[in-house]
Image (cartoon, rainbow, N blue to C red; front, side, top):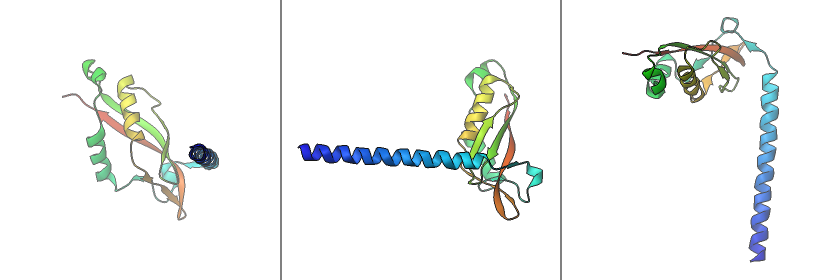
Length: 142
């Protein structure tokens, strides 16, 4: 019984140690990545794009976008411009809405972008680079 408990505790400690090491490595990679320049779309050879292209992006947005009830009840509509960075690995970071349209619409647009799969990163001289993106998300009431 004691032997099993010691093995379980040792396994838990090893797992915790691995998690801490992984978290430290991930934080280090993120810090290094954030120190690299972020390019405007007109400064790269190939722009970042949603994996699968524009049609897949539209399909994703139509499938996953939900009109917030609060905004619907208040008759709110408009285009939310979501700003974010496409990292070298295609992940999306620094997702924000600098100019609010409506709190509920802004929050839904941010949620949508944060749920997107990895993008194909921008390219400069044949290498993946970080790049800024602005994605307009339209909300229309019928």
